[in-house]
Length: 306
Image (cartoon, rainbow, N blue to C red; front, side, top):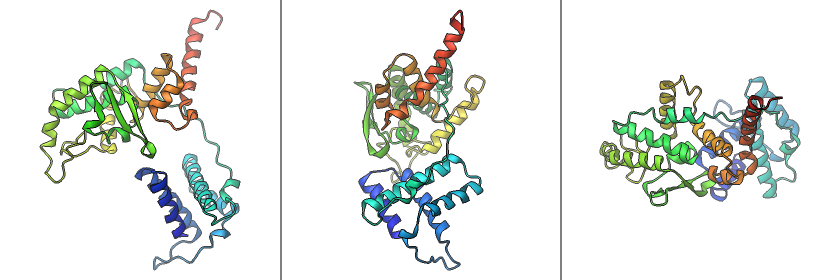
């Protein structure tokens, strides 16, 4: 079975251009299913598996073990989606005739609306970093750019210097599936990034010549490219510093706030989809529920017979 897993992962990597993070999740999910089917013995060996012997009952029993381990429904649903994709690929390659995972129902998930900040809370949060220090200038530029563009943190850390176009106030973003898109940003974000670039050389000088990444836009204190984990930590740090007005801030909060504020201001849903880099409009439509909640709130406050 391992050869089929490797074949599928190669397909995801080279044909579908999925990110390393997504590939790792697929590899983990399929590895867990393989371990369930045939655990390794004390010598690290497995007995052979007939891929055609796997049916929907086998997959249901696997999911039952996940429920018994009290795994989250979202995690179980993701693993089932992985198996569906895996067996669909095997059917496409004519290794199997039927996809057994198609006969297994996904767990019903609670619909969670994206959490967003008010405009006032966003401004307070973005202005928290101390711009008298090089790292403070960097952090201010990061927060301004995240809110101005709605890009993901994983997209932000991939930015290079030549991805920023100050003349046209836009950034070239490399999104999921290695798809590129152009997103605009405003004067505030431009000013913050320009201020950071004046101090960027101080951070770059801290790195050894063989480690530095002179093309990376955002650098850490050692002069090397910033990571998504580092951005998450700095967002948590500033969230604690202004917790009185911005509770429960996450790395995705500025992205959610960006989309919600645009929608509330009358932006077209298709335009927001393009800016966010969503493959499906249904993903973007989650923000219409947030906007509807606000409409109901305004109605309740303003209508005399509400």
